[in-house]
Amino acid sequence: MVIRSWDNRPFVPKQGERGYILVTAMWLLLLGASIVALLMLKNLGRGEEISFEREQLQIQYVQESAVETVVADMLFNGPRGEFVLLPAKTSYIIDGTQVTVRVTSESGKIDVNQADPSLIDRALRGFGISALQRQSFISQIKVERANGRLFQSNGDVESAMEKSGIIDRDGFCVSRYFTVYSGLASPQTNQMDAPLARALGQPTLEAAGKAGTGAAMKIEITSDGNAPLNVIIRTSGLVSQSHSVLDWRYAANCN
Image 1 (cartoon, rainbow, N blue to C red):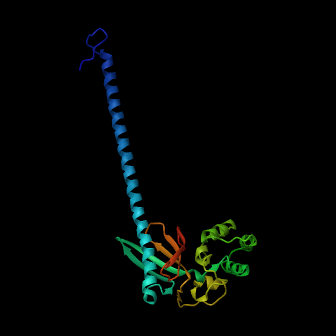
Image 2 (image 1 turned 90 degrees about the horizontal axis):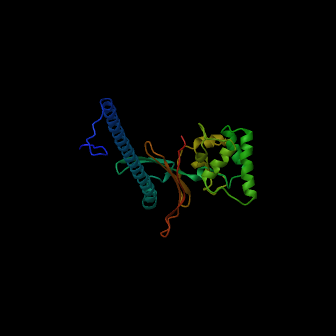
Image 3 (image 1 turned 180 degrees about the vertical axis):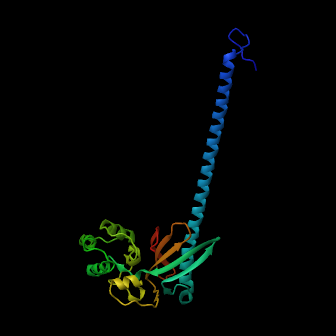
């Protein structure tokens, strides 16, 4: 291709202009190559993001399947099942992914909606919570009850404790020792974790407690490197509604 001037004569760059045109052409080639490289990197990053999202979705399905496996064992195997005595712990391999399952009873925890404030205060004192923080949390409970309101979830209890300056730490975990689902004025001694029993000044019972029909139970599903799934269910044994889900959330488990 020959570039021509306005009077149709061939355009011939001057001696000093040839180097400038060559440098410009090289810069244009480099710019084009850079744009192509950036587009390729962007597409590669998006591909990795989609792959990660697909992997997380698969793990989520595996965790949900583990919950269904636990419920099915409770309903169909009954006294022969793995979860007759609580706490219970086992593991499954579902779709090539290993998950760890831990089932506990909410009956062994202090129900913030039902327990006497003095019992809640005694437990917090046993965990080393300061008087000021305990008083702040107990005041929140009394205000809610005076207004005819209840804590709707364990997450509400955690938020109230955080507002009072009480946070999770070694030896103390809100969702491990407190609940809103048991409906009991005091926790069942044969269902309590040892740290809670010590905090209340009660003897620790080594024997596991039997899971009863109608009791709320917490199912914790964990797998390496993924957010754990925490589900609280209540079994009824009825044909029309074998169980009900009270809480379902992805959150870190207590150590």
